[in-house]
Image 1 (tube, rainbow, N blue to C red):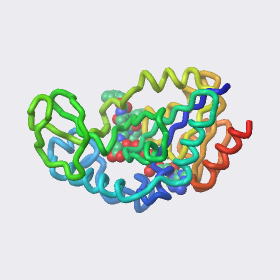
Image 2: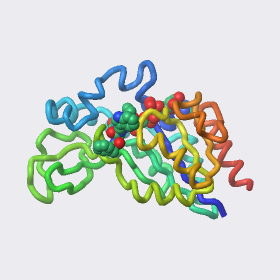
Image 3: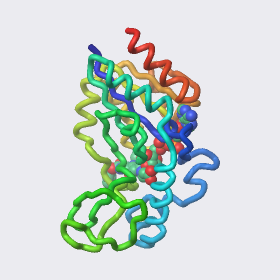
Length: 230
Ligand code: BJW
């Protein structure tokens, strides 16, 4: 009975129509990271940041999960051991496909966070700058997103899962952002077999035991079928 930890990145949602970050025409080619994905950028120009995430939230609401998300939900339902999906994505396509054992380590578009008391509540489709927190009334609402320099969520739970993983798979992530890019080394140290699924080898591709190259909507269902076939 194997325990499987799966790290997903923007590539798994690309074929649903959500842009990745580091492609030539991706989000970081259109916006400066410092402006939209740092606490300093939010402090300088909250309207710009709120508008950026409002646009991303409405885009995510307009697309559907694809065969790769569906295959991971199928794996969780049918596999005898633990299946944990750790996603860096802030869209909700994994949960809409039926994945339940899921960690959003970089936050979620559909959540709002109070910058004063850390209360969380469902984000409206259009957040406003200075919206009041329903718990403490401070005008300090922000998108519940982990920006550069902030601590990703549920790291203790992720490292505990990596330490007991038999199989670690990274899907559609470029391996440029830490701590997620370090999970393959952590899993390998714990004795897991490691697999990278991507269009091309990532920045940390040489650290994986195996690679499956191709679009996620084909490669992920193929891999899930092979696991479920035993
Ligand atoms: C397909 C496909 C298809 C396409 N099928 N595949 C120096 C060394 C080490 C670390 C650091 C350092 N300096 C600073 C740091 C830390 C920093 C960091 O890593 N910086 C690097 C840039 C060097 N990290 C942090 O700050 C993190 N926090 C942290 O470390 O806390 C600890 C700490 C706190 C305080 C002080 C000190 C330490 C936080 C990182 C937050 C990342 N946030 C973002 C934006 C917010 C979310 C959002 O707006 O959506 O998260 S950045 C962005 O990158 C986003 C993503 O989740 C993340 C990863 O991107 P991803 O998913 O890999 O996408 P792409 O576009 O890069 O790649 C897509 C891949 O898909 C490609 O490989 C394609 O080939 C593939 N693909 N189509 C299969 N159809």
